[in-house]
Length: 174
Image (cartoon, rainbow, N blue to C red):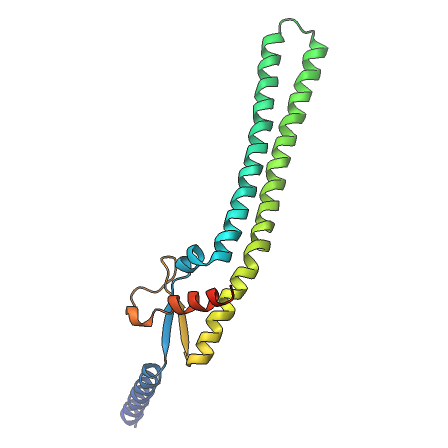
């Protein structure tokens, strides 16, 4: 009896596996290269340029603050012999305050730039995802994968690449 149940279970597993395989074989699949879309789609490029300009501006401000700090530090070192202990202590505290302002500025700018990145790129990603979903619905795709370098797709035939279709739809809005 156990052998009969064992054979029956094996047959059922094979039926399920082959049945699932034929269903999966009938699924319509495609992929996109999100990296290529991000470097080609004009709105994504514009958003990245804005973000880069803001990052450069923040970096320049930080560099100026650091240069001022170093200059004050050198000035204190040069004048150390001429200053009394109270004045040295005061200058050291001023340097410490400058250093803390630099650290706070750096943290604030990182947070601000991260929020700004989300603010600039979210509408771009939303538009790209909308177009991908529209293509998927309109053309009857069951699955659309991200086939970029950072994606998990190891191999796919070029005929299933939907990147050009996505870019064409995105360009239509111009």
